[in-house]
Length: 300
Ligand code: SIN
Image 1 (cartoon, helix red, strand yellow):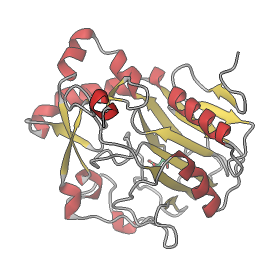
Image 2: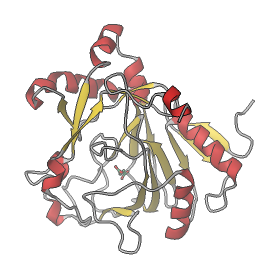
Image 3: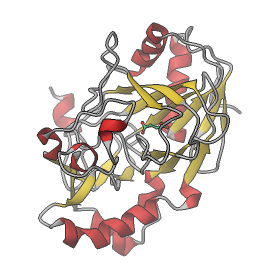
C-alpha cells in the first residue's frame, strides 16, 4: 500500500530520487506539503514536472518548507533577494559552469541550507542534466574499520576555491553571465563533523564534498588529500546516483544534508536558465561535534 494519499511518488532509481505527480505546486494543502516532505526525506531529491510558476508563486511554494537561506557570493535577483538565476548563455562556450563539480550547497556556512529548490525556465534541447548522489549510502557502505576512522573526524569547509581572491575553480568569473562575487570573506574556514547526523532521520551521513571541504581539522590540505580523495571517489559510486533530465517548468528539491549534486556542462551553444532558492538549515552535528541534547531540550 502507498505511504501517500494525495500525491503519486515514483522512485527513479533504487538508491536516490523520485518523481512526484498529481500535485499543483501553486495549490498545496497541508497534507500535500507533509507528503512531499516525507518523500523528500525518503528519496533525498524529488522532482516535479509541468509546474508553471511565476516568481511569487515559486517563493510561496518554497517557503512552505521553511525560511529562506542566505545566498553568498552570487548576485541575487534585484526584486527577489532570496532567488538566484542559474544561467549559462549560448555564447558561453568552453567555460566552467556554475555548480559543475560535486558539492552540497553552501556547506561552508556555519548553518548550511537544508534544501535547495530549482525551477527550470529555459532548458537546452539536450544536456544540462543534474546528477545527485546519496551520502547516507556513502557512509553506510564504508567498511567498519573505515567508519571507526572517519566517525570522530572534523572537516574544514571554505568557499575559497570558487569564490576566493586567487585563481577560481570556476575559471574567469568576470566573463560569466551570472554575477559571481569574489572576496576575502570566501577564505574563512568553518568546521563541520565529517560524519553528520541528519537532524530529521537520525541517520549518519558522509558530509564531505570536493568543492568546499578543503581539509581535515589539524591537517594541511596536502596531508588531508589522500583520505578526502578516497572519500570523494567512494561517495559518487554510480550506484549511489541518479540523473535528472530537465524540461521547462520541471522542479527539483533536494536535501543538502544528505546528498551532493552537480550540473553537467554538455550543452555548449544553448542557453540554460533555472531559478534557485535555498531553505535554511541548522548547524551540523555528529560524534565529532555533539548537537543538541534532546533531554535538555525537552526540559527547556
Ligand atoms: C546548483 O549547484 O545549485 C545548480 C545545479 C544545476 O544547475 O543543475
